Image (cartoon, rainbow, N blue to C red; front, side, top):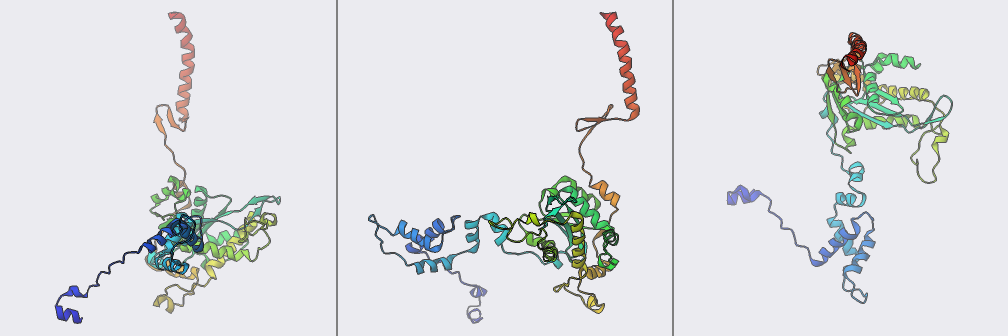
Length: 396
């Protein structure tokens, strides 16, 4: 401020540009050695990179060392100039960096969805092996789920042997279904307040770029007024609610079912146990376990970081996903679209192109025509069979 009063020029308050110091020849050599021997997929240590630098740059024709920097100077230069992004990408690859080491810069969930009606869709392979009714090993099932962004409520799920468009259709039907009847069919008794969403689909859905999501069949759901948003690849933190849901649900049954086909962290490592031999549960039995885990996740899991409003505190809304959902559903602004099951099924049916002609509809090399048209063509064919021999005799 004193400089401004003296010079009467606001420009004096701006930060002066710091001129970058030019590197010395030794520093340039150390930078070359790091790029050549350290930032590579060989994953050499700093000591190895330093030794290779001495061999290449500080050794004479007789193999004797010349005047060279110490290893402490080499490590100091590395610490002052290193960038962790370059470190991970150069040594592990760009794909691994995007999946495991990239900084998490996702938006806040409440800013992304200020009310209910926005859902994250995703699927995962369950960490358990199952058998059929005869006790024969079948494999690991796939769990597909939709989680509300604002309340983290599990809106619906599908447990199948494989994913694809059919699994998404089952997921949408699960969101529309009556959860009380669903649980009752499995011998599980719940109240309507524990899992109350039914008859409506979220107006906005976020999904990744999996083939089942970006295919033309599932994209037909936008005809119901639903907005489908595709997230960029390797951005798991952008749909953190559904990723956390999978983690909590699987942690719930892993401790109880340990030794019954549950896959542990040492899976497929050398010398690890073959968990396929421990499989004893069938799909039907595991299905009931998953439903119980989801009910516990929705109605008993405590949400510690939800931004409560004054009205919610006054009404004493419990910090559970189901209770917060029930409160939000009674307020204005919910982005839920009522859809019937038949309407959903007809919308998600696979579609293809065909051609119409006077002979009927032709699709995929097959011809479809009305019954009256088939009769008229067959009668015309019989008439030609009688006429053709006569014509051949007359004009023969």
